[in-house]
Image 1 (tube, rainbow, N blue to C red):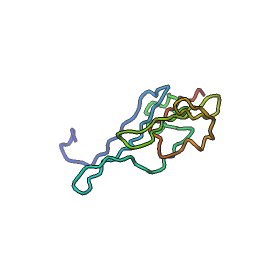
Image 2: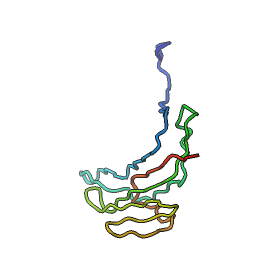
Image 3: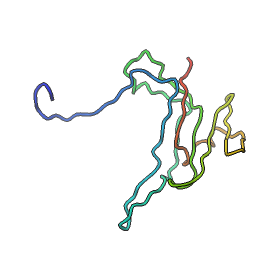
Image 4: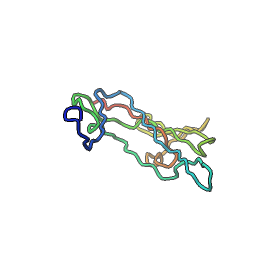
Length: 127
C-alpha cells in the first residue's frame, strides 16, 4: 500500500471507460503441453458456447455507455495450430450463413456453436 507501506491482499480489475461499436473477442484455443520431454502444440478440442446477445456492463465503469452487443460473425479454424482451414459464419438479414471458400449456405444459428470458433465479432446494440 502506498499510504501505509504494508503488504495487503489485492485484486486486479480492469474496466472499460468507453465501449467500442465493434467488439472482437479472440478465444485462446491453442495449447502447449510438455509431454515425454517435448513440447506439443495442439488445439483445445472442447466445445465453445457463446451468447447471441452479450452484455458487458460489469466491465464498464462509465454507465452512460451502451453495453449490449449482438453477435454478427464467427471466424473458425479447422485443423491443428500450425496448419488448417479457416471458415466463417456471418449474420445477414437475421439469417446465419456459412462461408467456406466459394461455398455459401444458410445454417441454423445453433450450428455456429462449436470447437472451431476462435474469433467472435459483436456489434453494439443500436437501442
